[in-house]
Image (cartoon, rainbow, N blue to C red):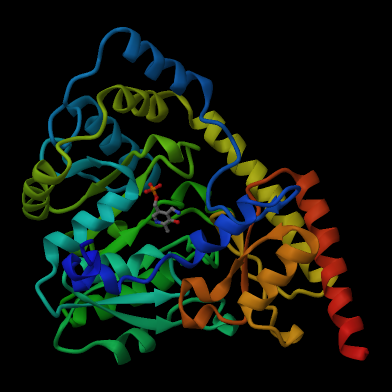
Length: 395
Ligand code: PMP
């Protein structure tokens, strides 16, 4: 008799929602000639000098474990980088953990701070992992829906209205995935006053900090009074074009770090040695390449926003990351119907906005981390798709 494996699984694990992005891309991957504006990763290959260091590290036999928190030399580079770029000061010895992607930093942060039933405010539309990570850590995600007319920016009033006596933390993400929205210093300061008033923590996901186009980037930890309350998360995936390296980092008050290190040593031990050596090179010697990639994204953003508005898909100009989040409401389709129709009719893959929470319904996420030529072709196809909808309507 065969086992009923369902009976052996944890309820918490079974209740997890599958990512709305993945299921779509499995379909797209099986088709030919698809232009993908779907994936959330750079189209650039990691700069050569970084790759070369990791290759040499392997050749030279750097194949062992490192300290749980990561190589001290890398942690020192991270603290120097955070100081240089974002004016926040951390101690390499006891305030930094090098993790397996920013994803793992998020996981560690929630596991370290949440007791069963604690609430975390998740501002939506949001990165698909957030709510599930909070749930897996035993907490309850409380969703706050931002609105397009506010540029998808959360207001202090919205935060205040969502706070209960169980609220432990707010999860901030600026620049945001999927909207690209970037919060400025004044907006962060206004959020900080609510954080202070209600004695909360902030988990600040700053993975797109290198890709903020229109103003100097402000880290939440740099807002007066917030350093003590912030778990700052960043990494190499986006700005340095290193998604596959799976390297991120987290900085926080040392009391948090010492608890996270305990979790980390049991779950993961450390990030790969040879790749950590590559990351040192990334922080020391690639600011020019990072800047060049950023300029490229900036041009693509401008092109994409202009083109979408021209063909009739309204979208605001996002301040950062590599996403635009146009409204498709005028088509009368749901975001899934739109994305499916576009994929099957014109072979352009985008992500339906509802994958990022209910407030993403009526929008699609288009990643512009692809060449201008591909973007141009995608825009032609989207325009044709829109025209076909109009024809159908008038039939
Ligand atoms: N946070 C956000 C907002 C993201 O978009 C992503 C990747 N899509 C991550 C975290 C995870 O990054 P990493 O590859 O470093 O795990």
